[in-house]
Image (cartoon, rainbow, N blue to C red; front, side, top):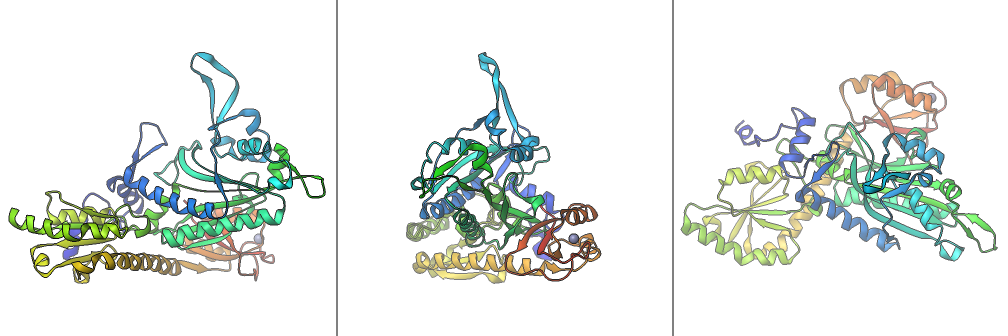
Length: 486
Ligand SMILES: [Zn+2]
């Protein structure tokens, strides 16, 4: 009861209004903000640092398997982007065009601002691909794209966003398919090992497939409101783009063949996933591996004399802890300790160390952690061992956060057999709901219509489908997960 008074007053509580909680946390924790441009956001340093941690981790993974970073132009000539019919049809409603420029006036040809770069990358790469010796080409670029959106949401859906887009070119279908799976597994690792978010990995339905792809695979994470977040996609493009852009090579038998290509991406949307996939009434909870600040130190003192002693004591171990690679921040502001606690809890810092005059005498610090903010969970750690102990405490926190998310996902995963059961379920709850499905898009559309927005997320790759389609009773082809998506 007393705890209630402790909740930060700046944010709506998650349990009261999830949507407002999300927007409040993004803005009050200084992750991102609205901008003068409708649909575009400003990413502030605290939010950008999370994106940078994701970038570093993923960039290391792709480099380790031979991928290289390139940079391709932001603008795509109209005749280039128009060449793959299905692709442009899928993207047309969201493409922004440059039609005039400065003193040149109207341009001879419109230029699209990239919504994604398959078309320009393909057009460029065919120059570098002559023979089987030039393959595979494993390209990636870190960049921004624009997809005109009116219903926007900070990080989750904005007209401009940052991402990486991989584009690879292979001599055989098997090799390209293996690439799709390799990247999907990297995405799973980023989600689970770095962001502490368990995910479903699987293949998308035709309706949810990337425009121009043979098939798409995705990772789907569960947010704390039970909605699904598609957090990364990996596409097998077959020879669709090679045909449209004449990306061909001479094989070992000296015969011309079209390349098999893939594309894949993760974006700043993942930062939104970290916020919504963890967090509680007090604000953010950040996984230590991507937290800009992992440990915050709050000095506690009564007067200038005790302040000097506390500061001097912190200085005896501060550098040693940093030396172990721990991202540590000492909050020396003049605010009351209670206000500082709320501030850093809202910002999701995993560990907090309180240091008062009594701690100085005992050569110790008092540790509390963001997952167990209750007072009785506090422990003391000897100052001498901090450099060694804190990395272990952070690793423990990372594991517990992943387990918390796994438990939540398990508690909110269900199985139904009929459309009536599914509709009934989504009247009162969310979560992932598995059901047998025949594969007919009409059945899928019927589910979305009757539930007002529930869609298929992806197919279970491990389980064979059994039973009858939940909608029309035909033999099931897939065991598929349904959810309300972001
Ligand atoms: Zn069916």
